[in-house]
Amino acid sequence: MKIKIFTTGGSIDKHYSLRSSQFEVGPPQVEDILREANVVFEYEIEQILAVDSLEIDEDKRRRIVERVQADPHSHILITHGTDTMVHTGRALVGTPGKVIVLTGSMQPAAFKHSDATYNIGFAIAALQTLPQGVYIAMNGRIFDPQRARKNLEMERFEED
Amino acid sequence: MKIKIFTTGGSIDKHYSLRSSQFEVGPPQVEDILREANVVFEYEIEQILAVDSLEIDEDKRRRIVERVQADPHSHILITHGTDTMVHTGRALVGTPGKVIVLTGSMQPAAFKHSDATYNIGFAIAALQTLPQGVYIAMNGRIFDPQRARKNLEMERFEED
Amino acid sequence: MKIKIFTTGGSIDKHYSLRSSQFEVGPPQVEDILREANVVFEYEIEQILAVDSLEIDEDKRRRIVERVQADPHSHILITHGTDTMVHTGRALVGTPGKVIVLTGSMQPAAFKHSDATYNIGFAIAALQTLPQGVYIAMNGRIFDPQRARKNLEMERFEED
Amino acid sequence: MKIKIFTTGGSIDKHYSLRSSQFEVGPPQVEDILREANVVFEYEIEQILAVDSLEIDEDKRRRIVERVQADPHSHILITHGTDTMVHTGRALVGTPGKVIVLTGSMQPAAFKHSDATYNIGFAIAALQTLPQGVYIAMNGRIFDPQRARKNLEMERFEED
Image (cartoon, rainbow over all chains, first blue to last red):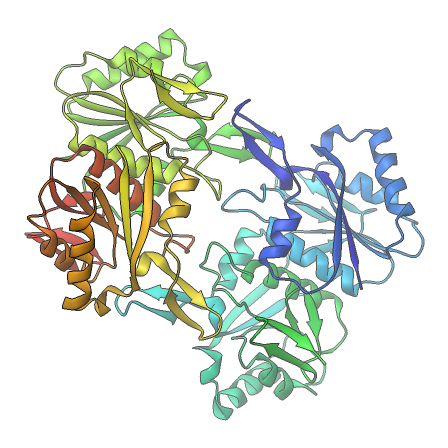
């Protein structure tokens, strides 16, 4: 089973720009994470966007949905900012013939302490084992995008 | 769903002893990994052994099997050294009413570069999604312990 | 020889705020760095400011100078943002009876890859060995604040 | 000022061998440390030995001394295991026309938590600022090799 990975930016890919002394979305971190984990499955990474997920408007979201639905692979991982991850998940509900898992991280993968590596590992196993559908994989749980939300106060995802 | 985690030692838990200038099995690392990942599921950690898995003889293996089978939880994660992980997996095959996943790491969790955090994330998702049975979760794949083996040359797990 | 450490913020202390999805100046990192290095000298840490050094105006700079000059210790380390580190260094030139070393980092100490720990180690040795005066300790070199500048293009300090 | 760096092994360079499931002395870590710190001084790295310092007998120690004394550079850093660092330091006392600093680390540089990067930064500044002589740079202090010793109990260096 080959896994297709689409990246869209988000906290997971943020790095520190010396020029601006600001945090910016940099290159996708999922590749380094998979290399360090020495995984043996086949995968292919493609960048759709490189933005903070608060900047994903309806146009950009449509672009993600079109790219995912047009893709020939049946197993798709999307790395995404956490703020609008559930919105993109909902927009993908109903995609036929695919298992789609969205993940990301609260703390950038470039940090010493981050949930990024755990989340990628967790999402990949979810992708390999779940039936067709769309899922949010965050905080060590699999959520239904229709019922999930990010609890800003608690800094984690939860479900009704 | 509450997850019971049994630890037995192995590379994942190795640290550097200043006294002996040697690598030794230290305290279980899975707790720190789950805390840093900010997981929201319930879990409980219990140490059965703290040894290199080459030191797990038939007596020690029987002790692991008895503890796992006597445990009331239905979802069980076992962290284990990689050298004899498949042997312990095979000894657990047939355990009724449980999903059991074994994982560990090639490089100690204490290292900057390690597969430990990825593997724990991966194993936890496998545990939540797979049907009853015994599984090895390593290198980003789920293996059947009856057919899996560690390829020392390639430094990864594979299946016939 | 007891070392007094004043912190003022800067990239070295930046962390990622989940609330704002922005980089912000957090608690001083020098304490963790010294603890992990297991240093045996005596020291005392005091926070004067917690800001990006571009925000240090003449009032704030005067406050730093007054606090440093009023301090009874003869050996003073200042952690500071890199953008105006030389300005604060120049404002301190002429302080009688003290060795003063300013350092910081280009990449936050919270990152996996950062110059923070190296720079703190380097600055502490400079402080212990140099004669009275004010010094910038960055990029593995000791600079005279009167002649040093940050080369934004090259992302490092240099001297005429 | 160009710095010559001789490496001899020791805990600082230990990594985890998957073949033997043992800690072994690997390639010198000082190069990665200096690259990550983005240092601007010139340096050259040369490996003399790659052993645990308990294995440095009189023959090997003589080899280190000969190489250091025959080297044309005036500023020399030696990375060395901590167990016999003071012995090598004493053997080098009296070397004319050179500043020689020995350092290493208690915890391997490959570990998430290690004193290696701090110690290298500290030793480099000591090398640039101290007068001719031989010095041990450990635990954030500069020691005289004639009076220093490793306190195994306390896991740090101290001086009479």
